[in-house]
Image (cartoon, rainbow, N blue to C red):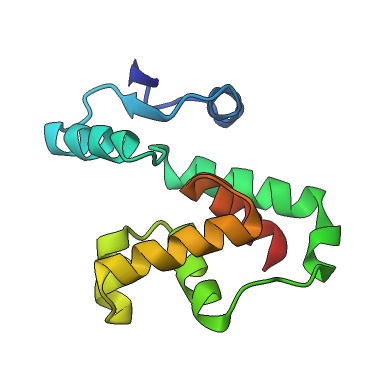
Length: 134
């Protein structure tokens, strides 16, 4: 589910509440057609489509709420941590493949293994986990 024609001056608290309620994306009024299409494709792939401002704020808020996770032993290899950082920063799998000079299938395999190790099911949860643990 996504919200369309949302005011460009949406309040950050309202946007946080929308995210908490399971909405997968927000499209503002007068959203350019190519951005709209890109967002719909991202949502169909299981990704979220929110402004970087709100995602950054949510990650920072969670990081400040739960400092005890920083002491936890992280069960990831150095390469998996590198990929998780890329995912958390918003890079697509294609971009990660290109940046790290590895195949798309290798990226997907690493991401699958990372999700299993940290017990998450999507990129947003993985990003939250990374924010709490790195």
